[in-house]
Length: 130
Image (cartoon, rainbow, N blue to C red; front, side, top):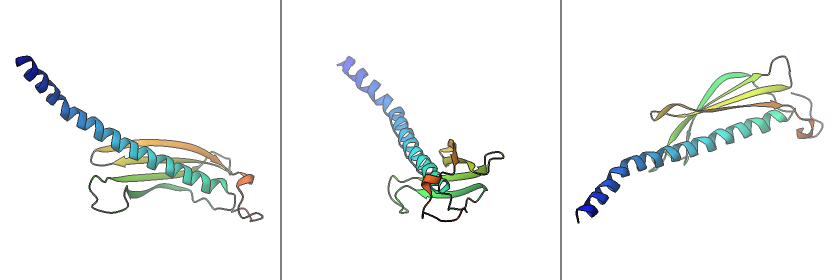
């Protein structure tokens, strides 16, 4: 009986750390989805030579995962996007995206990608360079 009680108490003592790990994985998984979607959206837009690219410092947007305020279990993320020209190359750009979820993680995760203009992505066909 004593051994069973000790076993149950040991399992119960692990529960708070399990909840923390689960929450961390949930926030990180959502943040990585937002990060890579933002990178891909910017990449697709920049690759088309018809689209103008606005070089800008960090532009920040707040993203609520369910797109509805006040939903249980929802989280709000801050997404900062920076687009700069890649050196002297006028057809290449570096896109950096940082996703944070304060107050739990003010550092967040970040990723950069180098994007070049692609003629095969020109749409509509025959449009002038932007």
